[in-house]
Image 1 (cartoon, rainbow, N blue to C red):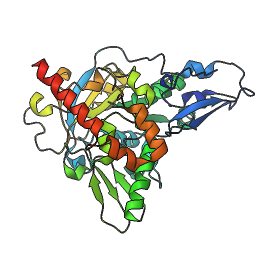
Image 2 (image 1 turned 90 degrees about the vertical axis):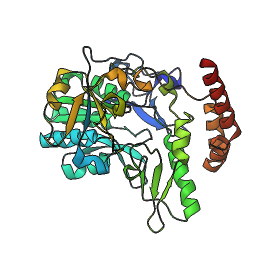
Image 3 (image 1 turned 120 degrees about the vertical axis):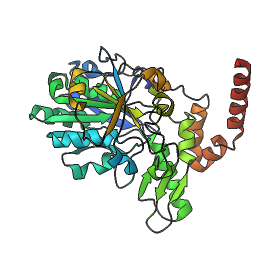
Image 4 (image 1 turned 180 degrees about the vertical axis):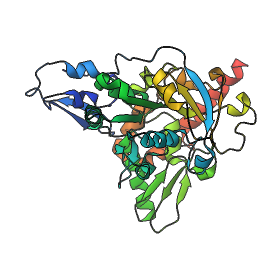
Length: 375
């Protein structure tokens, strides 16, 4: 039986709920919107399947050489946040008869994993969503497709990929996993609180959102909210709090997948530093993807892409990101931030933890002092 001693012990992948043959486990959201398994003891038979598929406390990773490439798809750059790798992988998979799973926004702008079989259905799965996606029932749906003889491409965070891999271990030859280099997953409740705050300011709800608007350039980290009758808004209120590590799932600060050894076949990331590592390859601020391939299955899949794509081997050490070495450390203010948000709402926490707040200015002053003494 799944028994969580601490919130840090669960990543919310929901593989345990999908594994239970008796329907004894349901995923319930806490006050910040993070989902955790809740066991109905009257249905549980202590079969141990839920613990067997739990990938978070006991991580597994592909072994062997990790191949790294800088890659970009010129035809996809205008609508992509990096080099278009995610879209290219999904399109290739659909063209080869795969079912594709990825994160999308619903009508309320909540983020959920969805299923797609046609190129036309892939559009909602594109672009980054800086909110933890709802995976309820998704690992079970992946397993059902595999049992029916289908090939599946699953894309998500490394912990989500690891959970799906454990549940579907018997069908791993038809399951292709593509994870992202993850900074940590923000709280769904805070995202919804932000949307409600903006709706109150504008007098109408936003109908779409972009977490990193590609039209602003690759290095711009701002969100765009799109309203039905009012001009769209470009700002970094939510993004700023995200990068302060104030609202991440508790397990993210102890993530066992923050490494170059990944649980997936393919890993996707922005290729930050490509300008120095490969001068002239991507100097136009239109984005470049880093593709890391960890398994023979992954290498076979990415051997061929459209002739229009540009790709080149790259020294991984020259483009190594922090979350490929260690997990994101939660802010010392994370707990007080959560308490303040739950009691007083988004406007209050943005004033008290945003760029003009005292604790942020103190944090920056300490950082500058440390930097000075390191020289």
